[in-house]
Length: 274
Length: 274
Image (cartoon, rainbow over all chains, first blue to last red; front, side, top):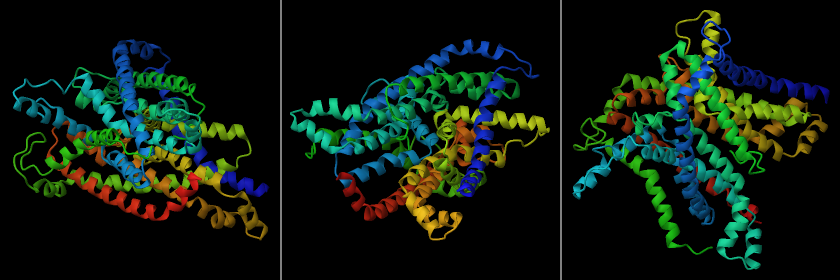
């Protein structure tokens, strides 16, 4: 038994070392760079510079929230419909939901430029019927649309998975006791699907808040998000890494706080995530 | 609930249209005779030929495959060993804290993970006096293995929980040494989890842009980074041709996978409904 537990320790040790070196130490690096200057001296200057970027921070959170809520509103009925359809149809629908996720998201986002552009497909159609062209691209709406488009499957999949796990007999019991369809959804299905909603919301909100590609392509210069700023600091080279680190640090804490608050609403242990 | 409502079908179709419209646009414009990705000027296959003449694209494709193959194999082996160890830890505190650390790369925004790893590499490079070509294939591999590991572990752990612990002990009682018993009894039982972890790691690696963007050098561009560089300038339809090919490959693969699993699974599904 002792030898076996020794072997267990050996089996786990490469990962423990790896996780320490490449998960924990890099986070320490973010903290270290946030609070030091070029020569390695302690400073609060980088943190103070954060206040210059309050606008992008607030805009990121606002657009991220908007995209998350829209995804939830669209995805919930869809997940319900899929979970309650026949076996063959479920399989097909899951395939159709997952297929876009496997395509390169840069190109999927880019092709919205073809659709929304000033001379794009929609505007070609609009002008063809004699209306003035619409301002679609380079707006906040376009950025939210891009986020919803890119991350919608991440909302559908966990909600669908949790709905499959709901015990049918509970639904039948509610119906036997005289609950209508709306009541069944409200009092049985919805409460039981909260863990799926929580992981869906997480999987949409986190990448939406921190995106930089979607805002670059669909938002133009008017929608500078926090991801854009961090990416800019990276491009500017080594002197800007300290400010970039402090921005990452704050972003990380912000998301951590959001997730903790959200997890309060559910008893999920995160096991629905995969 | 068996009744298929017209509204439900319409809703599903609308969402599918939303998900597939940009992909359809990509496919159509990949056959464009002109250079534009917004105005069609005749049909042609020339961009498909162009694609295979483009050295940079082919190189990045090769890099993508190299990184995906190596990183997914390494992370699967290390992750399976880690899951086995985690499963057998006697201390709850230790297991919980390792699992928490494991969750970090999944919860953290990719931009923070990428930025943090980049800071680590820059810091080490400075300490070791490496200035040129600091970021390259090795750093890319380290990063990919790091973000793939949690997914492997979370795919393998549930399978370990499902295996009957008596089997392992029975094998040992019959005189099989523990290590051999592990390979003969446990490993076959958790193989489905290992394989889905491997597949997930591979696809995540192929698809990753954000983390790779921060840790790759000029000599180690992967396909998503190459696509990003191209969308910074002007996308020519050869990128759309590439995604059309990728789309078809994935479609065929998923359909094959679906066909195989639908032949195997009816029994399992029936069990779940009982």
